[in-house]
Length: 130
Image (cartoon, rainbow, N blue to C red; front, side):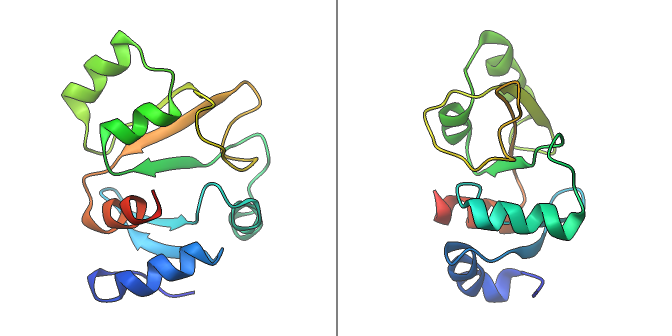
């Protein structure tokens, strides 16, 4: 597994599109990531981290507009997004079901954790993956 930085972003996008996992810097630490719509890739993250199925993964997106695809939008989310996004705030809200995501990303209660990142590497990767 390679750590992703500005020099190998194209390679990272290709790896993610092929179901691989990558390590990348975020605004708070390093993240272990994959394509959230790829079940095999999500399963790899759970295995690597030894994570239990009751603790879903978060979704990193490049823009508030993309966050709106995944979350049932509300006035509270609008206020939070205007004040804190992009940035290191992760919100948990109801999954909109507009986008198909792998098991382990959406919680059993149909909630999803989403962050609109301001960190250049995850912003680029998530924008490229759509």
